[in-house]
Image (cartoon, rainbow, N blue to C red; front, side):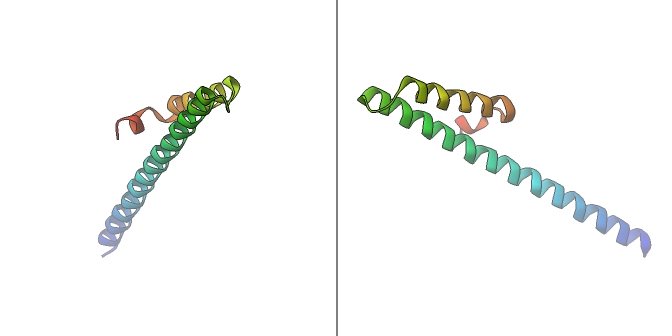
Length: 77
């Protein structure tokens, strides 16, 4: 009986770990999408004359840091 409970506990723990990893992936993709939108908005504002090159560069830098940390998978989805 103890062996069964140990295996069940291990399997439940593995499921929790996999669930957390998937949640982290989804959150990173969502954050990447948000950063991409901010970059687009900054570029648009700069082209329209209401934004600055500095704001565009800051948005690009934030996106590049995100890609360095989490990869660029969100660009394909």
